[in-house]
Image (cartoon, rainbow, N blue to C red; front, top):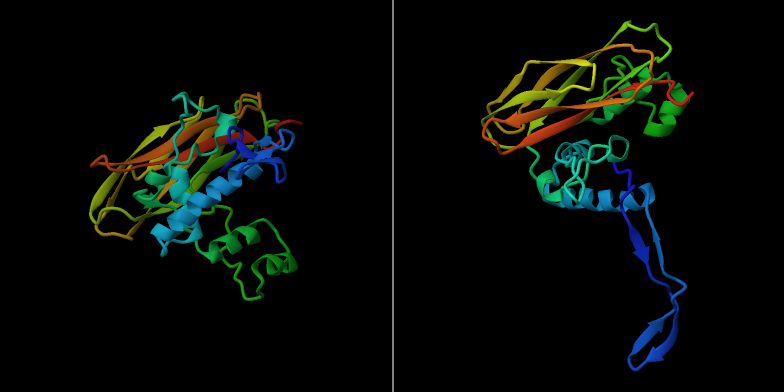
Length: 252
């Protein structure tokens, strides 16, 4: 969510070398400038804290969703961000305060994910800090505001690889509204979404939809990118979710 490849964080030295009147002269040796995820994290966390202040009723998942689905794909020079450096895009705090729709998730949803990943009972208890959890409905399909379809790059060329997802969105915008979907599929990938419109009668109402990604293996092991965008008919909100189709054995 916050790769930090273009986030620059600087600091000044703690000690001063001399006093000049009421001011101090800092040493030129202690200045530094770094970037990376550890620098992006405070920025993203700060935006999350601001959103929590504006919407104290939102869950952590809803806040994350708002930050991701309203992010821009353009950099500061208004040029498209390179795919591998983008994540969901650059955070736009003002848009995140009013995202229109959010992808929410409850604690049990994460437990169901852990169960589906074959974590042991002790491992799940270590993470949840509780032995009172339910694995009856384990699922890898977490209600996350993005879609990742993995495939084995060694599979026979031409084989059709299919992934299906279910998502639930919550209307946090206007009471009565309609959203319509637009798909920008990754190169060579077929993406189907149904239904193609979501009608909400009131605020906090939920609607679900399904996504099917079909990719004919070309044996190249490429990482491919696309997106699903839900746009409000009034034009007030645009809710974007990235799509990534990637080989599980990339780099091997």
